[in-house]
Amino acid sequence: MPKDEIYRSESADTATFAFNAVVADVFPDMLQRSIPGYAETIDSIGQLASRYVMPNTQCYDLGCSLAAATLAMRRNIVVPGCRIVAVDSAAAMVERCRKIVASDDHKTDACNNSVAIQILHADIREVEISRASMVVLNYTLQFLPVADRLPMLKKIADAMVENGILILSEKVIDNDPHIERLLVELHHQFKRRNAYSELEISRKRTALENVLIPESIDVHLERLRLAGFRHAGPWLRFFNFVSILAIR
Ligand code: GEK
Image: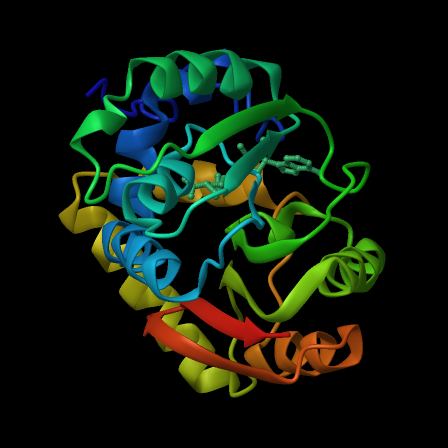
């Protein structure tokens, strides 16, 4: 797996973070070393797919990057007639995503269902969603302008079948400033343990400013309620990274 050394060199470009080819090439390593609980989240998305995906419905992986959640869903869907739509707006991600999906040997799936995967190079705000029993926003909503988040969630809720689920994973801020400082420090410690230097951590932090806009868990839960989800609650928290399950 190519190692993320984007912010290591003295000449590193600390301008605004972008999902370009340089990032896409090291992306699996970057997520693994930067997002606490990332692998467990992907694994659990697979488990939830086996439980919640309904026959003859569609699944969506919005902001799919390199299809980690898409493939976890496909490997675990146990009902017939399903299709997964994977969407990303970054050309560099979509190009690599298509290759990864094409080379994935889904004959090793738990069941013998053939689950078609459609990969779209598009903005998730523009994509039509329909008959969805499972939608994944795994660390994607945080990159949308705040004003676009409720319309996005409403569009998802409106397109869902009854009891359909949304997995919303986000970097969050804590309402208590003391806890917030602690969680940020623990996250930086996590990154140092994963061999990121102090300089790399601070450069990445600067690059993500105004690109990744975190909110509190309360704000997310209230927005999900307003969007039309009947139930919503966090099922995983690891420092300032949270995954919420919402049921239509
Ligand atoms: C995973 N879910 O591995 N429309 C489409 N894609 C977008 C948009 C948008 N408006 N904004 C951002 N993206 C993945 C990880 S990464 C998380 C998701 C991270 C895409 C962007 O191009 C990138 O590929 C992805 O959302 C966010 O489970 O980098 O922290």
